[in-house]
Length: 267
Image (cartoon, rainbow, N blue to C red; front, side, top):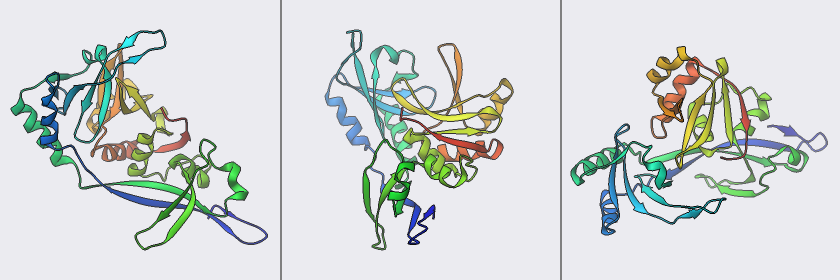
């Protein structure tokens, strides 16, 4: 309960709801079928051993009028468009059919049957706290639980939910909830010793970046499972996006607890 009306006793509640969706990865046959287009390429990432099928996609016009050519990378669980000029800075290399097939099957084996996500809903008496709710969207949702219970309310971000009780101190955020919130793009997590986690866009893909680290932390961060890249002559650390992400964030929280969560516009 986050608010109780003094006159009527009507309550405003903050609910945490688990949503479970069945994963539907791209099958190997569907990936190989893209080769019907002679311009398609089978790729394997030299660093991560991940796979992708490169296919043509539409170009876009930049603000200065330049036409930017792009390609689309189809992966087992997602797809992204990347400017052609940036492909040379990545670790994607063309692979033969056998190597690609083996790596794609290995990725499929890692995909869980379901993905759980956490939703936060404010329900009950909303009018007294309406101005406290996020102003970027006033959409009202109606959900039905497995038990048949119907819920009507406003969806809020994990950062808003954490701050509703703690005034910004968010040490109770779980690794799974933090991972989901960071991927959503509207949450920034400040950790102990000046570290910060947030979603960023790198070469056309969403990543979770850790900033504020010192030289002495580098080996520890790599041991936790974070990976580093030198981009524009600057060392940057990222949390892998995938099944291992929440576990790695949990290791971070064990050494560098969450001190505050904040909201921002999605990047």
